[in-house]
Amino acid sequence: MRATVWSGRNTVQVENVPDPRIMNDRDAIVKISSTAICGSDLHLYDGYIPTMKRGDILGHEFMGEVVETGKGVTSPEVGDRVVVPFPIACGDCWSCQHELYSVCENSNPNSGIAEKMFGHSTAGIFGYSHITGGYAGGQAEYARVPYADVGPLKIEDDLTDEQVLFLSDIFPTGFFGADLCDITDGEVIAVFGAGPWASSPSPAR
View 1 (tube, rainbow, N blue to C red):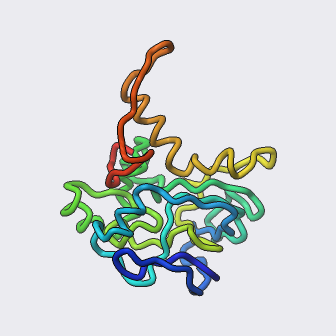
View 2: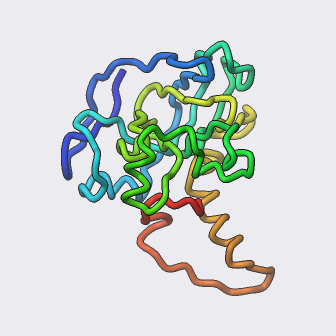
View 3: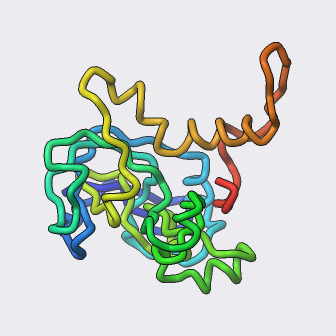
C-alpha cells in the first residue's frame, strides 16, 4: 500500500509499505477513506519529538471502512464505516474504566519513555512516534486499529466523511477545552493559539 512516511527532520514522502495485518484478536483493519493533518504533526516534521524512526507512518486523524476484524471483535463489523479516535484505549484498565482513555495504562508499550518526557504516560497514539507506542498512522491506504472494540465510532451512511472526520481529534479537543471553561449561552470568548491544536499530547485530552 501507499503511505506518508517520516524520513528525517523536515522530510516526509509517500512510499510503498507493507499492508497492515491482524496481530491480536481485538484488532481491525480499516481501509482509509479520509485522513487529516494535525498541528501536532508539525512536532514530528520539525524534529521536536524524539524516537521517530525512518519509515514511520504518520497520521492520527482518520476514518474509513472496516475490512477485517480479529476474532475478539464483535463490533464494529466488516463493512461498517468508522471514525478512529487518536488515542488507543484498551477499555479494561482503571483509566479506561473511568473514561480517561488518553491515559490508557495498557496500550503504550513505551510508557516509561513517555513518562520521562511528559512527566506522565499517555495512551498509545496512532502515527505519533515510538514514545507513544510506535503505532502506524492513518495517512495511508489501510491501518491496523488495536482494541477495535473500544475506540472506533460507527458512522451512519447518511453522513459524509467531511461531516464526521474531525471527531477523530480536532472536534473533541476543542469541545473539551470549551467544557473546561464552563462557557454559557451569550458569553463572548476569544481563542488564542497557533492553529486548532499545536501542543504536545496531554492526559487532559
